[in-house]
Amino acid sequence: MKNWFMLSLIGLDQSSMVARLSAGLCKNGCNLGDSSMVRLGKYFTIMLMVEHEGGKESLESVIASICEPLKLNAHLVELEDGTQHHCEPDVRISLFADDRIGIVEDATTPLAQAGLNSRP
Image (tube, rainbow, N blue to C red; front, side, top):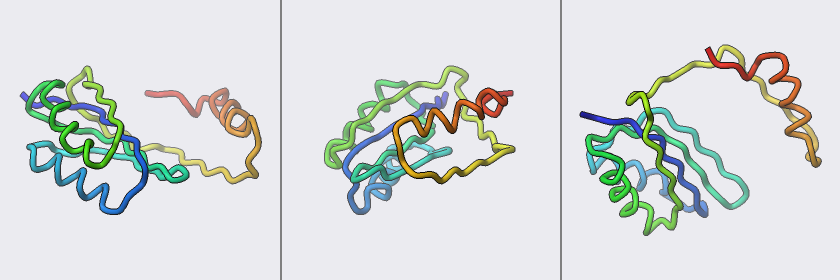
């Protein structure tokens, strides 16, 4: 039986990181699902859904062998329902503002109060 996991990785940004990560996972029998990547300062972070035939411990071993040479910190969570669901948002909002303390709270609180943070 194949299981779905959510994998989060963080480390210093470096060339070919995504290629090495995806190749390592695929060569170890993993199927990659949805992902989200971002560069924050000089750090790179990725969250991705990973389908793997084995259990969590087996996948952690695979991830460790990939992440060690890349110096990535990993966090792995087994998904309870055993599947990955792709939910296309019906609203997408982009905000641009000068940075200041409290800007994220000031922007997101009214959106959440308006129900834009709810799930079906």
